[in-house]
Length: 424
Image (cartoon, rainbow, N blue to C red; front, side):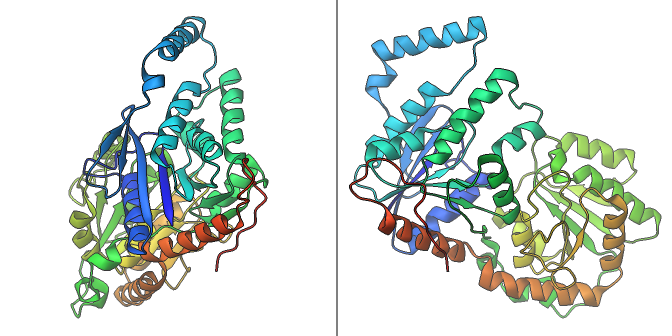
C-alpha cells in the first residue's frame, strides 16, 4: 500500500533531539515501512514544505502558482486587510497551499493519513482532489490544548476556527484516536458522523532495553532511597506542580526516596523554582530533554514511574508505555476506567487527578514495598512486550488502512464518512 503521511502544522521530524510528536511520527513511519508499505511524509517545518521517503533525506516541495504571481499578491492583500481590520482568520491560504503540495506529492497513492491539527484542512482538500480516502490521526483535543496554554481563540475567530476544523473532520473516512479519553473527547467535540477507532501508541524502549537491564528483573538488593521518575513536559495539565508538592509531603512523612524529572519545555523553570521553594534541591534532579537512547537507561535503573495528569481528558500518555517497557510500576492519574492500558494493583496504582494526598500515599506505599515494585514492574514489562510496541501499533493501523481502501467507492469523487471499518 502507498500511504501519504501529512503534517500540516509544524512538527520537526528532521532535526534531533525530537519531541514527543516527532518521535511518534518517525516510529509509526518506520514500522509501517517495516511491514512492506511505501510511506511518504509531507511535513511543514517553519512554513516550508518537505517530503521524505526515508526520514533522513528531505526534499523541498513548492507550489509555484501559489508561491508567486497574482495569487500570491492576492494573499498578501487579504492578509494585510485581515491584520489592519482585525478580521477573523480561516487558515485558507495555508490549507490551500498545503493541499496543493500534497496533490503534487501523493499522486498515485492509495490513502492519506493526516495528523489532525487546529483549523488545518489541507489534507481534506488533497483527499478530495486526489479522490482517495483520508484517515485522520487524533492525538488530543487541539482546542483543549490551546485552552490549557491560554491561547485559545475567542469570539468570531473561535466560531470560524471550529467551523473549518469541523468541515475538515467530516471529510475523513475514519479517525484513529490514540486513547479512549481522547476518543470520548473527540466525539463530544465533533460528533459521530465519522467512525472512530482507538489505536494506542507504542514505545521503542521494548527493543532498546532487554529484561536483564531492568531493575525489576535484576537480582539486587532494594535501594534505601528508591528513585521515582517523571518523563514528559511541564505544562500545567501534566501535573508536575502537584507531583512536587505531593513528593514534598511524602518526604515530610518520612518517605525516603529521590525524584528524577526528565524533559523540557514551558513550565520547566517554574517547576525548578517550586522544587527550590519546597527545599527539595538535594533529592530532586532535572535532566532537561533527552533522546530515548539517553533516557532509556535512566528508566531502566529507576524504581517507579509517575504520570500525575491534572485537568486532562486522557491518561494513557506515551510516558506510561515507556515506564512499562522499562519494567516500572506506574503511579498514574485516572478516572472512569481510564487509563485502560494500566491495571490498578497489577501494573500501576491509579489515583484521582490533581489529588495531592492520594498521590503522596501512593508514592509512600510503593517506596516502602520493594517486593511489590518488583512484582508490578515485571508484569508491566511483560505486557509491554506484547501490547505496546510500535510494531503492534503499525499492524493495527495497516489493517485499518487496508479495510478503508477496500471499502472506498472508487467512482465517487467525494469522501464517504459512513464507510465502516473494524479492527481486530
